Image (cartoon, rainbow over all chains, first blue to last red; front, side):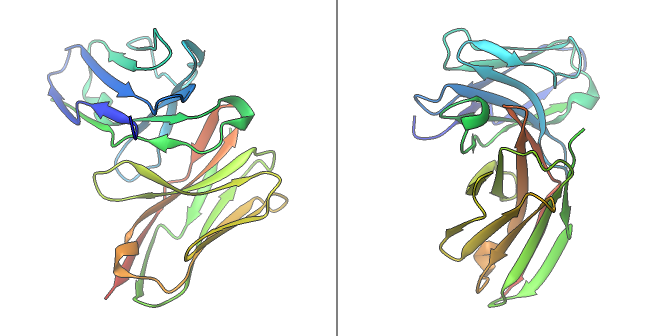
Length: 116
Length: 111
């Protein structure tokens, strides 16, 4: 696609429920990133994919969070047993290359998650 | 842990003024420094990318500079317009893949 696409744009769920957030990166971009942004703060790194593999998942806060990118394109961020503290905007970004030559990051509009 | 700081947190200027936004980072071994714009409720839009070997980049009324030795980058906006009102974020790339973001400067340009 022309840009990074994220769905849903808004998700309201109850504490304890399971949530999936989807990211469709720019066509041909090999690197994909998930970030989380709380109100008034800059985005915080969650996980980075190079192709199909999670090259760095050190930003995932705990084992309730998991992400996949099975075919090296679309990625899904999965959150189990959601907690109120998970409420934030989840941003996806892609870049043409990864590593040191990552170049420009291009972001989607984000998925706003609210856990009641 | 790498830290990125942006000062001021908020800035209000009259239309037409030239202004400078500041970004500082603790580790000078960065790969790239990227500036973004974020409108309320929206994602981040890339403005300028400065690679570690470069000192500045320009796009239209925007000019970004990078001084690795002092750990600083500045974003210069010439002849500001109300449409420039947004939050501006800088991000420093380290460790091959991680981009560390500042908390942003919220800019308001008054007509």
